[in-house]
Image: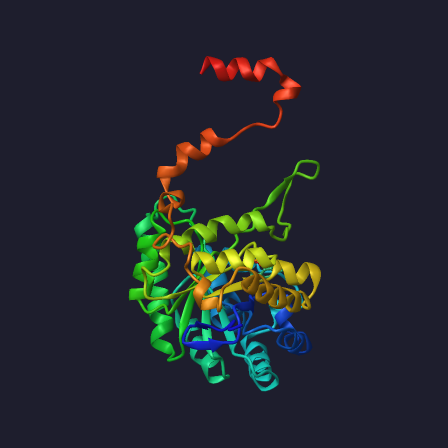
Length: 347
Ligand SMILES: Cc1cc2nc3c(=O)[nH]c(=O)nc-3n(C[C@H](O)[C@H](O)[C@H](O)COP(=O)(O)O)c2cc1C
């Protein structure tokens, strides 16, 4: 069975790639990922805030105090791993490259343009095979328009691209007015890949202590529906490879991602929850699934249910909206008996 795929110009032995997570901080865990069948690995991110934190510029930002970025920096976590500066990151990347045969993708995480972007070049020099640019940005300013936010993404990507010659993928949020248009413009600005989507961590409220509680819950498979839809819509329509992140847990999830048109499926929560060796099961399971369903390769499956190839392309869009709503059958008619049926009859 040919499980190979191509992502960012890299020939990968299969479509299973551990995404950026704390598991990638440890060289022995990276080796374990490679041994368990990972085709490539994306390292944890080097944050813009970390870079500024280590530089003189931090003082300037903090003392000026007018920039919202300064406020963001003051909330930066005190955990030792986030306190380590760019040198530690670059050293780790170089060690990972020496330790592994699979491609190593560096990750730069930020929102604003500035001299910090030059660290993209350092990531390349440390040996990264490609770079993932994560723009984790929640626009809250009342006076910033959607197009200004979009321009910020594009400008940042252009700056990063001009600093490196390795391929760059951009990890996005799903919150754009038109993701298709934005995706296309990002490819025009130089993105070789789109990583869909960043998972926004929603804070909760602690009513007893009157606090906001930023606790992280790992994903579940249902969350995959959002990237799945957009990958199916974008596949074959933009000149970039698509990576699916969020909600990939099972063999079926991997197969669905590929059928929608993903070049690779990424894993974080599943490996954090059930261990790195899950990769072995997913790899063997994908192979068995392909055999059982009479596919000869991953390539043959890729995009087979994308909007271009799907018998029901409308299912990805509004056209199917009313049908979906009316197809819902509550499972409580017996309990509520005639009330439910009466209401249905009245409509
Ligand atoms: C504890 C934790 C740390 C993460 N750190 C990063 C990071 O440094 N950079 C990044 O781009 N994504 C980071 N992510 C996001 C993951 O790479 C991934 O996109 C997200 O968790 C959704 O995938 P999943 O459903 O497989 O978990 C992190 C996720 C978790 C759970």
